[in-house]
Length: 320
Image (cartoon, rainbow, N blue to C red; front, side):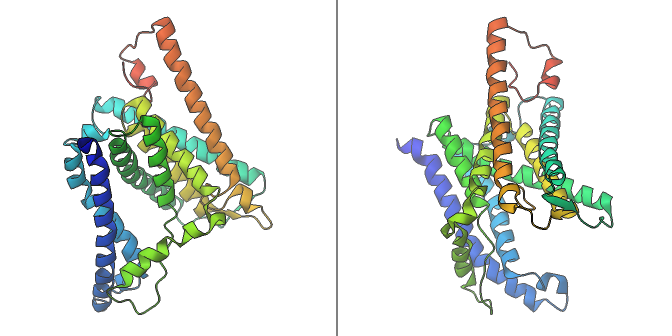
């Protein structure tokens, strides 16, 4: 029993150290930036919540390796980043990215055609905007999938049924997106990080701000977790996540809500904060589950062989 609880205790200690460390590091970094303003004015002009968010991210990434060692993960394969040869993993990533970009792009175009959004001013450098959106998608997809599916979901599966582990990790993933910007009154002092962490939780006190975004992101986490389970790796989920973020960034850069549009249904720049996004993601989840069940039944019924070339056409399925 004690051995089974080690992953949970390791995750709890990891979370406490990350948040406590960020609360201590953010004020120090902010005050240091103010002191160095003559040399780096661009750094000193950033608001305090930027320093807090970056501190949380850096500490989460920096503490990931000791956590993985504690959980017994000593190679990328334990995170779902190893396994098959790189062409197969690249195919999984590519198919996931195409599925994510196509699905989220379709939602954006439907919103435009329905009159809920309208095109904004043309981007001064469209290629730069595309490259920035692609880079942001890749960075967010890689970091969040490693943290939430590779580390969190993997650790919970050691002590829970995979369904419970999927539900709990998806809930934590969704809730993490509602850690709103910290609001701390000036001047910033050494204890401001603790006050900021408390203010970051204020969104959870406003039920109207949680829904439907919390449900939508929870379903997104569930779909990404199922993709990992079916494929046996993170590559397809990273691609799917990156494709979603790519179009969310383009949607915010190239369009805006139309005057009088019902943003409660259609959502804003993030798309997932409206009921339309929830319904679309629910449809995607049901389609993926139905396809997975059909694929598994077909392999058992017909004993379909898996030729070497088939894994590149069906990269979201675990190789037999």
